[in-house]
Every structure is written in structure tokens, then in C-alpha cells.
Length: 397
Image (cartoon, one colour):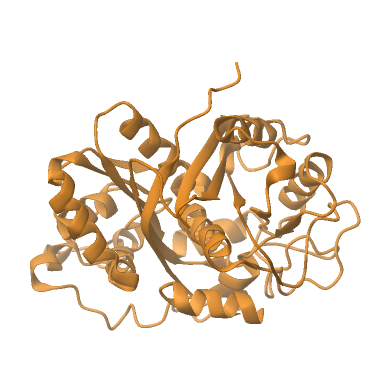
């Protein structure tokens, strides 16, 4: 059944931190200059021969004393991201408007604090965690959300979504439902994932990691570059300059790590997002593709793009800038889509030189400028978890 159109939600504040820098300004500048943030892998004691999108300074960071019990790389990155672009202040103001119990917190992550748990297992004492690592609240998939809830002083519903690489895209859908049902008046959404051995070696074991910078939709693409990021957005009732207009979710369950060959789940998510926004695909001014640079993902998504969008559409993958930030990819690319609406910058696709002829003509290598009234962001995860988001420019913009 086709979903009904939804009222838009205003996006009152948003921010992202990734390999390109802390906050929106360095991200926008790199996108405008087609400057990648990837570098040769220097993570871990024996780095894999690959390229990564690493955020500098996390090892030297210290959390505030009142939050020190949550210390781990993932929560440090979350704290770094929360401090950018006035986001902490925006949430504090919303807390005053609505009350702490009326703001939901919904975060996506694929690994949470597993890097800290890896470290704990390397320092076992008599077969048990060392005393300093006996911190159950850190060694849990919900660690990120509990940490951010305390950091922001929120008391409303709190959810952790972990659907692989669609995790922090699906947070927008969950937030919309909670607000529409009257359970809350606002929601902080976002996602954080950091580099760790499980991710790097896990994807390498699947033969999905490129030895060089990833090349989305290139005819010679050979795998992903893994990155890390933190991103957040504040959603509230009513219209505003930037709005969530629609979302679509689908699970095709075709294969544990390979998308459906015809992109059925991805297309269903697209159809539902467009229906909730009350628009056709041709109305979209910019498409941020999932575009991981893996052979099958790009093939399937490129074919979907070609058959559903006009050749004049501007689409790109930004993973060549940031790396694939896994559970944080959805929020990071939502932020890029919102920047496109706010600034008129439609990013290109870096590192790619020769586009695969089987992918759509809509994929652009160079950035462009022009009005962006509507943007679409795709996020697809292992197991056939698909999410599509439509963002729009409000009348007040």
C-alpha cells in the first residue's frame, strides 16, 4: 500500500564531523573544492594496506569530568561532533521550549563502543576484564545513546538503531513517527561510528576493501574505503527553512551482504519516500547516492538511478571524500544533502575518473551550483536494509 503524504518537520539545527574536519564549514569547503579527506591507513598496530577517512585528535581528547565514565573512541567522537555548529546550544534551547521529557533521542550506529571492548579483551586479567575496563555501560551497543542522553540532559524516549549502513538514515523515520503520534514534540537524531579492528578486518575478510582511495561508480572500482564520523540533527514540529519531507524504508532480505540484483528493496524505499513527500522523482534537484564503490552496490544503485531519474538530474557519491562511515553514513550524507539545499552546492564524485557505462548519466564527477529545493539521500545496509530520505527547502528559506 502506498503511504500517505506526511506533514514536513523543520530541521532546526544540524552538524557533522568527519575526516574533512569538525563541523559543516570544512565539509562544505572540501565538497566545493573536490578535496578528499582519505589518507593511507595509519590505524592500529598493524595497519591494513588500504585508505581510510580518519578524524584527527580523538586519541588525545578527554571527556568532561562528569562524562568521563563513558570514555571510549566512539563517545569521544560523539562529544567532538556535538560541540560543533552551535548544536549543544540549539538542543539546550529546545529543552527549554519543550521540556527534557518531550525530546526523543534516536541514534544509529553499527559498532558503538566495540573498539573499547576489543581493547578490553587484549588486557584480560585471569580471564576477566581488567578493573579499569569493568564498565558495563560502555561495553554495550546502547553506549552511544546513553552517553549522548546524559550529555544533552534529555529524558524522553531513547533508541539505538543498528541496521548496518542504513542505521543513521532510519533515525529520521523513527523520529517522524514519534512526533506525528504525539509522543514527543522534538527529536535529536544522528549517528556515530569510529574506526576499529572489527570493522577494518571484517570488511577486508569479505574482500570489500580497496587498497587505494575508493572510486564510486568507476569502471575499475574495487572496493570501499572505511571512514568515521559523527552527525546530529534537531527535528521539531512545523515548517522551517530546512525540512524533512519524506522517508522510505524497505528490507529485501536477499542476501546477508549483497543487494538484490534488481534493487527491489531500494526502489521500494525510494517509492515510499517520494509518496510521503508528495512528489515525483523528476522533482529532485540533487541525489546523494549510497555509492560505496563496491562492484555490486554501485551496479544496482546506478541502474535504479538510470531508470527512475531524468538524465539531467545531478547525482553523486560523497564517500570518496569521507570514506564509508558505516552506521554514521546516513546522517553524514543527510547533512551533505541539507548543505546542498542551504548553499546550492551539488557535490561531485571524487577519485573516480571513468564512469561505468552501466550506471546512469545522472552521476556527476564535478560539483555544480544552482538552486536545490529538494534533495534525496540513499542509504543501504547489509541484509537488505534500505532507506531513502527526502529533504526540502521550506517557504521560510
